[in-house]
Amino acid sequence: MDLGAAMPRDAALDAGRPSAAARLDYEPGWDGLRAVAVASVVLFHAHAPMAGGGVLGVDIFFVLSGFLISTILRDQVERRGAVDVRGFFERRVRRLAPALYVMLVVTFVASRLFGPWPETPKPFAVFLAGAYLTDFYLMSRQAAGSFLNPTWSLAVEAQFYLLWPLVVTALARLPKRGAFYVLLLAWAAMTTLRGAVSHSDNLVAAYAPWLHATGLLLGSALAFLRPARTELFGWLGLIFAAVAMAPVDIGGAALPLAECGAALIIAAPPAILRLPPLVRLGEISYGVYLWHMPVIAALGYPVGLGAATLDLGVSILVAALSWRFVERRFLRRDGLRSTQPKVQGQPARP
Image (tube, rainbow, N blue to C red; front, side, top):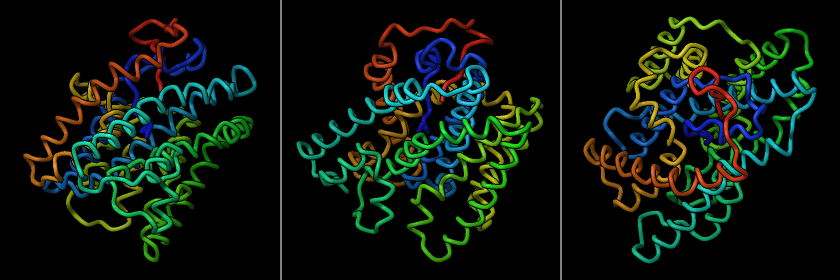
């Protein structure tokens, strides 16, 4: 996930060339939203009490990623007339691949030297995770349980990246707000389809990349709307997300409610999401997502709130090391630095 990817605050390192994201200022509340999303996912996988709605954390990530990616691409089209496709893919690979491959190598070796851990992946599963194809593997019903299964969301997002520069290039040329309405209708149609499929084929509904496009589509629609920031929207979004993720069964309404809540928060993040601990967790949330399931497996899949808290704490520690020693090194290559002021003009990053 860029969850995608959740990115560290050093926005300049991920923005690529100085003008790539110059019109999208950094908003710490977005990192706060990432923190809430990744913590909910970790607690869900750790079987914490009343954390069943945490599975929606991935869809919240998708909304934010769709918004950031589409905003950056839209601005490139508006300013230059075209997307810098090569630069776009270079930045995505440099941001996402090194940390993923380090995690795959370390966990594969460690699970065999110090294991076997529960659900240790087979070599083919490791290959598919590195090739961003885990979603199709899981959807095919051929996959045994593995702590690499959460890489399906990274695969969904990578496949989205392959198509989206061309899609945004076309959408940016539509009449004012035309792209917003096209994407909103696509989100509504895909949400309806996803709900229908979930009644007949849970695996397809859970892992099909085209069905998980719902959050990406809604976030992208928001990028073309450019709403005015009214913090009331953000608080309403928090309420929506909390209801969707609460331990109460509201059926098929949970997914669109969580996604709409995320969109409202992105449009106007409430002050509570700018709290420094949340912002810092959001900055390293990509690493937390990558490492949380291997950590849970290495600890033997303990259950309970205390065990879930331990899982989250260890995942945060490993993610901080990943950010310090892996991710920053690749992002600093070529001496990329921000030309923007650090407070209001710091460019955001997907």
